[in-house]
Length: 176
Image 1: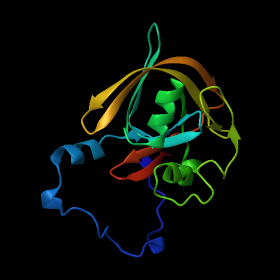
Image 2: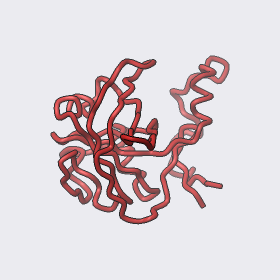
Image 3: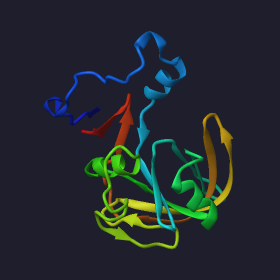
Image 4: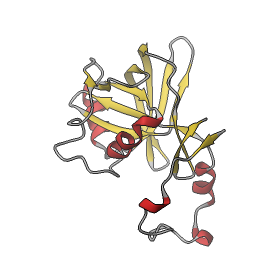
């Protein structure tokens, strides 16, 4: 079970004034919204970063990581140029960080100016993240309106058993 930590008093509107009316919403988008997804931060040397909730790890020989990213993002340009990137699973304490790297929260001075970061050969990672994976970029191709990125996991650093930050129906949630 998970819950939303939401303060309705912090909102100006009780509904999203820009939301598509319910009768006009794409059934596929509504289906995607009903699938719980982990919130991860992808970073690359440069530095550049992007919040990504479409990440999948496939264990095998070699271990692989797949994800859907925005082809026009700074993260993609940096990862493609470097041929590598880092992926950090985020925790409930990282809500603001996730919003900042998703472009939903202001970041005066740049994305990496607040918080504590650890430099890795794959890109900076949040020092307080529960871990990270260093990935070598293998391929990318258009997939729907995104790029399907395939990578080989070259290293994994796990710090603790931090609870995950989850995305479900347009909001962050956490396990309880």
